[in-house]
Picture 1 (cartoon, rainbow, N blue to C red):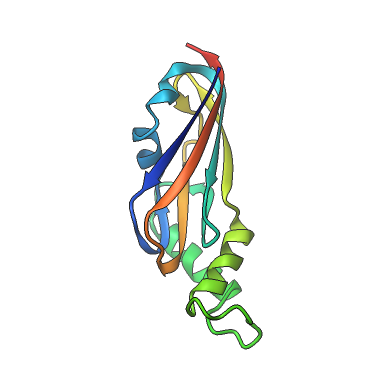
Picture 2: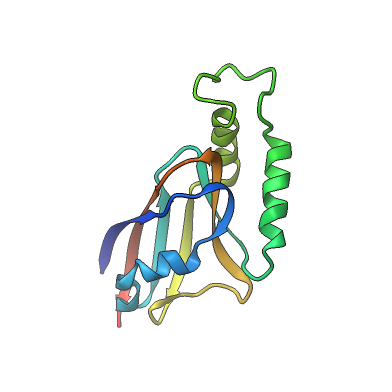
Length: 141
């Protein structure tokens, strides 16, 4: 069985956000699957998806500090500068971290590790609402 849907995430300011619950609450179809995979594609070039620590919020703060060090604003070598100081670094961060995840489904739920959660990396000062295209494939319950 295959299903596909688009989830609109609420707008956020720059930073890393745990969005596992937001994805699951907008993905009722997940409960239809005994076993399968979910592919999540963030349909943007200035944000990212990642799977990481879901318990301690300081990890997300450190992610933000580290990624800003890797792709700083106003670097002298940027030529793509007309969309704001945060735009080119946001594109680099998106490519470094990626925009998709493939997650296992077991008995109607994502089968993540104990301390794993889905992160949205918002790399613009204010990127607006973000869309995630979710494709589900698997055996029905």
